[in-house]
Amino acid sequence: KAGVTQTPRYLIKTRGQQVTLSCSPISGHRSVSWYQQTPGQGLQFLFEYFSETQRNKGNFPGRFSGRQFSNSRSEMNVSTLELGDSALYLCASTTSGGENEQFFGPGTRLTVL
Amino acid sequence: QQPVQSPQAVILREGEDAVINCSSSKALYSVHWYRQKHGEAPVFLMILLKGGEQKGHDKISASFNEKKQQSSLYLTASQLSYSGTYFCGTTTYFSGGYNKLIFGAGTRLAVHP
Image (tube, rainbow over all chains, first blue to last red; front, top):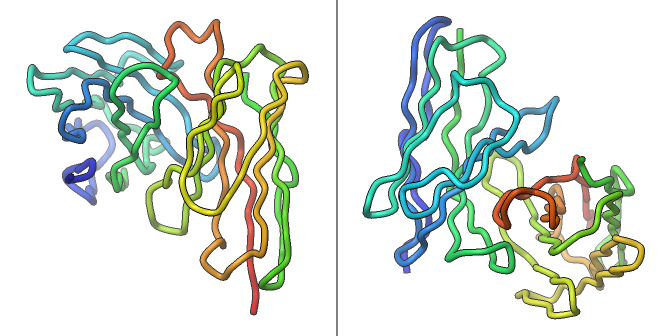
């Protein structure tokens, strides 16, 4: 079974630009969660999508948004990039419910200059 | 609120044992353990559920004390491959949904020959 895939793996942007990251979950998984990882703040929850609906949201500004498609693939968008948005963005997929394992993709390393 | 992990770092010789703890001030529904190696995505190790059910792989064990809202990860007869940063992620009854993992700051483990 193929794992979680994320594209692109690396991205360099400048302040003020916007970026879109993509995540394809494990086949059969309907829930996709996004996390931001930085050395200073650690792993922080951004949002979760299930059946094309945002089910949970973390404490990030509105510049961070996402969506999920009918095939469970998910995208997250960050508008008006700031230097502090430089991070590893991870998505994780699971079947449903916190009683199940979440499997992480390799992440997208975003650098904002 | 972020769970607290202890210790922050551990250095071991091959074959030695270690215990990593994760505690929360909130009632927990589940505790998820991950290991992350430098430059890689977190890898799922173990999930412990309220009520005692435990799911996991590998030769690593864990416990979940529901009364104290604490979980411990036991690494026995450590191997070089155990090196990495260990994270606990928790879900609570009040997280707004089960797939919102709140992670601890991590415990760095280094195993030397």
